Length: 75
Image 1: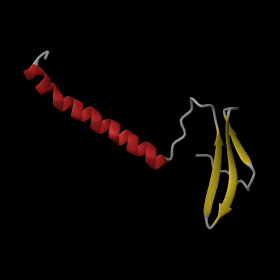
Image 2: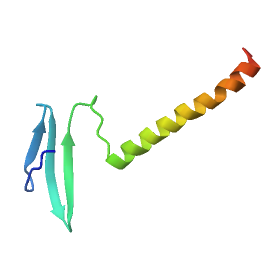
Image 3: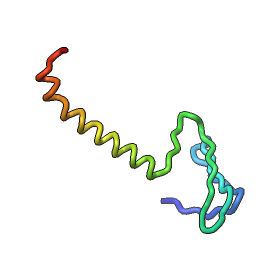
Image 4: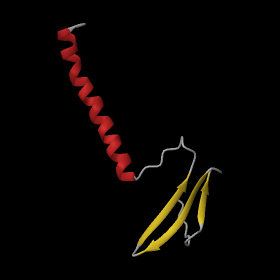
C-alpha cells in the first residue's frame, strides 16, 4: 500500500486520468474530490461490499430455483 501525506488543495493523479484532491480537513475528517472518466466506478468501500454481498446472495437464490424450473418445465 502506498501511503501519502497531502494538504488541502493538493491532489494525487492515478493513471493519467483519475484526480483525487483534498478539499478540506475538519474535525478529524478528510473531504475528498474525485475526477475520473464516467466509465470508472467510484464507490465507498461499504457500498461496494454491500453490492458484492447482494450479488452473491442473488446467485445462491437462482440456484434454489432450478428444481422448481424442472418441475414446471416450459410454462
